[in-house]
Every structure is written in structure tokens, then in C-alpha cells.
Amino acid sequence: MFDVGDYIIYGNSGVCKINKIGPMKMAGAVRDRLYYTMVPCYIRDSEIFTPVDNDRVVMRKVMTKEEAEDFIGSIGNIGTLEIIEEKRREQEYKQAVLTCDPVIIVELMKTISIRMEERISEGKKVTAADAKYYHIAEDSLYGEIAVSLGMDKDQVRDSLKDRIEEGIRQTA
Image 1 (cartoon, rainbow, N blue to C red):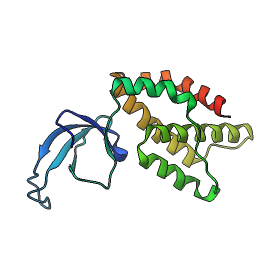
Image 2 (image 1 turned 60 degrees about the vertical axis):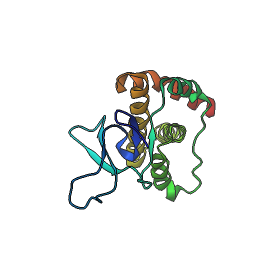
Image 3 (image 1 turned 45 degrees about the horizontal axis):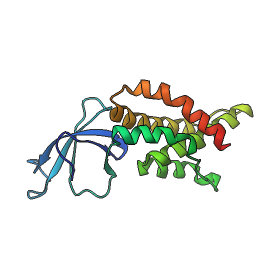
């Protein structure tokens, strides 16, 4: 169980701060059940309520500062996703995002970056799915690291973009 004030990853909502833990006085809420009341860090004017025992959505603490620094140092060693069936590409992207695992998120970003570069070099456009899931992956990764390091998300994006691209060249 998490504590009030903790920053956690909550599925596709990304980084959230837990503001309250307790029963909910709302229609449809189970009386004896505890709920987290959370505010997403990067979604304005939003509040999320979820049971503390919710196992249908990934909930985990954000990386500590030390874990984030170690993770950043390891980005060059992270590989790419292996997508065998082209027809399942978007489904594979979606599954990767749903893990909320920073290693898998970087694998996804590298995979999509390589694909986008190849398409552009062939005179083709970047697909909507590639652009969509790359953006989702960026928001997820940079948001968590920003909170862990006490930085702005754009600062993290600027500092990690080169590191990720360098990791792509090492992987290729």
C-alpha cells in the first residue's frame, strides 16, 4: 500500500500524487473498501479514485532519484522490441505502453525511432500509430524521470533525447 504524499505511476495516467486514502462517500463505492484519491501530475484539473487493492491497472512507486540516475546511465544498453508480425505492430506498441515499465518504454521508443528513420529515408511518411505511441512513451518516461529528479519534463526530454538516439546507434 502507498502513503499519502507518494508519487506513483498509475497506468496510462502516468505520475500521480496520492492526496488521500480512505473510504469513499460516493454512490457505487463499496463502504468498507479503501480508495486512493490521486491527482495526475500532467493532466490538468483531474482527480482519480481507485481502490487500494486495484490489480487491473499498474500501480507502482516512481523511481527514486538514485534509481532514475542509474536508469539514465543504462539507456544505451537497452535494446529494441522484436515485432515479428507487421499486422500486430500497433497491438505490440499498446502492450508495451500498458506495462508502464521504463525499460520496455525505452525499447518501444528505440523501435519506433528506427522505424521512423527508415520510413523517412525511403520517402514514406511516419505512420499515425508510430507518432502516437512514441509520444505516449515519451510522456510516460520523461514524466516519471522529471518527478524523480525534481526537474521539468521538457528539461528531461532535452537531456535524454541525445542519450536515446545514441543508444539507437549502438543497437543498430
